[in-house]
Image (cartoon, rainbow, N blue to C red):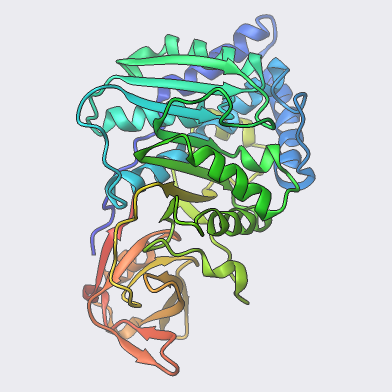
Length: 399
């Protein structure tokens, strides 16, 4: 069992320092401790907005430098890594094929200050993609777009050969109006839940279909949302509705174009990732007295495309973890959604693990995709016993 199967590029130190420098430039006469306190107070407000109030307006955090600098120094690296994980899956597991030559066209709807789209540029360059890249970023906040332009130009060595165009637009209007150009990659990074905070799944689905119409035939739409159960359930319901006419197809997080079964099931889990990452030092410093959980990256996502998805054999042997790896009474056990679209419980007896295998099993993360070569169905067949660690192959385990 190989972990990792894909490397996630670390959040660049240059960007971390860029955001901190901007905070110091904003308040040149303030001591560091005062700047940190101001950022902390704003982060508490933002945390409540993202996780409790769920109320967003143009004045929420896109119109004030304090809000944008708090986001940039604290939340920007998390959002960056969310996209890095999902894009790695699109490229390395889902067989998203990039154009061999000519420019790569990327559209970021609700770009903010650029965490999602700049992470895409960096990920593509880190993977050796040499095509010129034309990025169009759209957001309602002109101030946010200003930070994006300055960051793109100021650290251009991180994404050479890329061009950036920004446009200020209220995304509550028709997404596709005035966007006849087709794109290889479209990004919606925590956008839908903010512009439709209380919308029904059908409204989400209409927006997804509207955006997907802007894809090239081989292009892919990446939608990342917060890991809140309500947000994830609504996203997956919407994705299922948007793909009913087969004009657009689901490529992930599950298999063979199948929708998430957890939205209609009596399950203890909902569909989202829990990933590990290296927390930036400045974020750690700001977080000190706040005590927010920085250890885990939590997010939900879907991948959509006009082309049919990669096919997997529709059995219980290929699956994505939707639970943590738990240990009790001589067993490691976890829950997965398999390539046949069903939920299964998997287990390994600790006595069957050789020396060192336990640490490998404990490195498995929620969101990893595994294939088992040998297994024993138990009970009604929804419980699967894996004989040992050698019976597990990792198809996708990014770190």
